[in-house]
Each structure stands twice: as C-alpha cells, then as structure tokens.
Image 1 (tube, rainbow, N blue to C red):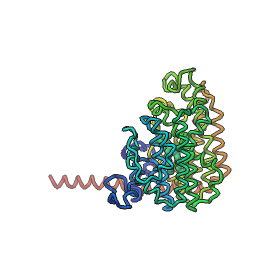
Image 2 (image 1 turned 120 degrees about the horizontal axis):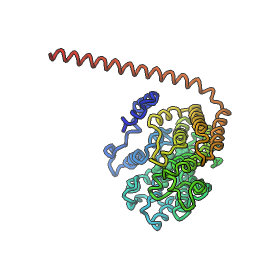
Image 3 (image 1 turned 60 degrees about the vertical axis):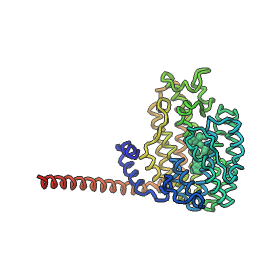
Image 4 (image 1 turned 30 degrees about the vertical axis):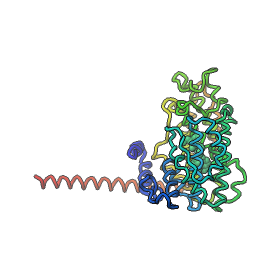
Amino acid sequence: MATAAFTASLGHPSEIYALLKYKLTTSDAVTKYTTLESITAKKDSPEYSYQMCYYFLNKTSRSFARVIQELHPELCHPVCIFYLTLRGLDTIEDDMTLDNKVKLPLLRGFDKIMYKKGWTFKESGPNEKDRILLVDYDVVITEFLKLKPKYQVVIANIAKRMGNGMADFCEGKKVKTVADYDLYCHYVAGLVGIGLTGLFSESGLESASLTESEYLQNRMGLFLQKVNIIKDYLEDWKDGRSFWPEEIWGKYVWENAGLGSLSKPENINDALACLNELCVNVLKLAPDCLEYMAKLKEPSVLHFCAIPQVMAIASIALFFNNNVVFTKGGLKIRRGLAVKLIYEATTFDGVKEVFKKYALDIARQNSLRVGKNPKDESFMPISEACSDIVRWINKHDVVAGTNKKKERERQEFIAMIVMALVGAITSFCMIQFFKWVKTWEA
Ligand code: D61
Ligand code: MG
C-alpha cells in the first residue's frame, strides 16, 4: 500500500519528497495505539478506555486520526471523543440492516445514551465498517464522562441536534431540493463545524467571538460533506441510496429515469453537466471557508481545520467534468499530493495559495472544454465561482507568503538533489563491493 503511494507519485518528485518527510516525521503519539496488541493497560485500569479510544480513532478514520492527535494537548482528547461519539451515531444512521423501530430511538436518544455507563450496541449489520466501535462503545462513554463538563455540554448538544436531524431523514424526509441537501449536510457535517468551534472557544485557545454566528461554522462542514457526496455517487447508488438533490439531477435525466441513468455510458454528457452543476454548488462555499479560517489564531487549530479543506478543493479539481465519477467511482487524490497539501496547509498563507491554485486550475479546465458539451450550462457559473475565490484571496493579499514559499521550494529542491546523490553514491558503493566480493570468490 505504501509502495503504491510512491509509485503513483513517480512523476511528481515534490510529492515523493513530501511522502518521505511525512513517513520520517510521524510522531510516536500518532502510531501508539494502532493495533490491539499495543493496548498495554489491563481491562479494569483507568488507562484502558483511554488507550482503546485512540485505537478506535486510528481504526475508524484514515483522514482525521493524525490531525486530531496533532491538535494542542488541551483540545486533542475532547476532539477525539467528539469524533468517536459522532462516528458512533453515524454508524447507526448508515446501517441499512437496522429496523427504524430500533434505529430512530437510538438516534433521537443518543444525547442520553452518551451518559449511560457501560452502554454498548451489538446489533449492527455484519458489514457495517465501524461496528466494533459500538460493540465496545462503553470505553467512549467512560472517557466522555472524564472530560471537563464544559466540553461534555458542547458534545451532547451537537449529538442531540445531529441525531434528531438524521432521524428525520431516516423517517422519510428525502433530499429533493437544494435546501434539503443543505439541511442534510448541516445535520451530518455542518454541526461538526459548529461543535468544533464550541470546543475551540471553550478551550480558550480561540476567541469566544468565533462562536457568534453559526453560518460560517456550518459552511466549513457543508464544503467537506458535499465533496464526499459527489465522490460517493456510484457507491451510494449501488447501496440503494443517494444524496444528490433531485432539484439538480432532475434537469439531466428523462422523466422517471432516476439518478441511476447518469451512470449509463450513453448519458455521459448529461451526467457531466449534472456533476459540474454540483461542483458550482460546492465551490460557492469556499470563500466562506476561507473567511472562517482567517479568524483562527492557534496554529494547531488552523492546521487541523485547513487540512480537510485543502484536500476538498484539490478533490473538486479532480472531480470536475470527470467521467470516472460515473464509471469507476471512488476517485481520490494521490496520497503524495495529499501529504504535500498537509504541509502547505501549515499557515494561512499556504492555505490561500492552495485555494488560488485550484480555483485557477478549475477555471482553466473550464475554459478548455467550452463548447464541447451541449448539455452543460455551467460555464459561466463555474467561472464566476472560481473568480470569487481568487477575488477573496487577492483582497486578503497573498504576496507576503510568496517569498517564503519560493524559499521553501528552493530548500526542498536542494534536499531532493542531496537525496538523489546519496542514493547514487550508495548504489555505486554497493556495486563496487559486490564486484570486489566476486573477485575474492574467484
Ligand atoms: C474543521 C475541521 C474538521 C471538520 C470541520 C471543521 C467541519 C466538519 C467536519 C470536520 C465534518 C466533516 C465530515 C465529512 C466526512 N463525512 C462523513 O464522515 C459522513 O458522516 C458524517 C456524520 C459523522 C461525522 C463524524 C465526524 C467526522 C469528522 C470529524 C468529526 C466527526 C469530529 C471532529 C473532527 C472531524 C459520512 O461518513 C461516511 C464515511 O464513513 O465516509 C456519511 O455517512 O455521510
Ligand atoms: Mg452517515
């Protein structure tokens, strides 16, 4: 798997460099509890539930585990427990084998369940990917109850709102209009942004004024969730569900044909036109996400928030007008690129550069395809959404960061040359050595 990441980045040396750097600098804290064997505490010791929570964090999240563990120590544990709580809730929501008679009371009552010492749930479907979390959920509750009450309040409040929102959609509410789409995404991801903001502010590391309006906090989550929903079109469709709003896809399918018809090869022009309209809808969120991140003060909080955001904008640049969304599905940016983005998201200047780069990239792709798809009317809206991103960034200058970036790139270039030289010299010496051994044998 690791080799595959390197192979995929072979044509991009700066990604190879980033991958190596990432591998070599992973802190022990992040890889401490990744397997059951690494759990050193006895079952009845207070350390056990703590270690198990980090085991579950590493087990249930590929993308968030590392960033959460690199947060400021005051926030790391509350955010970890916040994540596990909502992942538990989501595992119930996603489970298509559960009867609504079982599912709805769990979702609607989750903010009470969270306080029940020893509560576990063993009835998840056998294929539910995070079912083990619920099987041993008591460890999450134990750790939740150890958190400072101010953090517990934030987490329980979000679980209540999210659980009830999810239940509304399980009960029959459908994602028909764009407003429904926004509401669903608010429940499952916007509320995460709102809860995280509450935790940041309660910690004292971020200003209390960050919590004033839920609008920007919500948009942070919407941006991430909508990118996920676009990516998962094929997978969700095969699982018999869909989150794409009919108000949009309805324009691109024949009456009664359904969203599935977009995956048929003969409908590719309709499918791409639909996809591009969804991309407009996502891109419009980006300036608000930048606005939110501009307010952050603590570096580890900024990095934590920025990483998913830069991944999201790079992903849209990949999905835009891309038929693979409909033919193969599961489109992901290269691991090497993801790691490179992680480094670029360290400062807000870096974040602005990344957003600008992808906004311009999408605008360029957009202008190259103009006139090629008669079904597609998103040319102007895409162009406008990209311009709005660039305009926001130009207004909040990026000049100061450019020199720093040049300098960093220069250093990385030198580092790469050094690595190449070391590699070449090592191989040369080895070859000489083996030749020498051969002559001895003879
Ligand atoms: C700053 C930093 C991180 C942020 C943020 C702001 C705002 C929102 C989010 C993270 C959440 C983004 C979620 C995007 C991925 N979508 C999912 O995982 C879907 O489930 C949503 C419900 C559970 C959310 C649990 C969660 C996720 C990330 C967190 C967190 C809680 C707590 C702290 C930090 C990050 C998706 O899951 C399917 C899947 O497994 O891929 C679904 O069911 O639709
Ligand atoms: Mg879900």
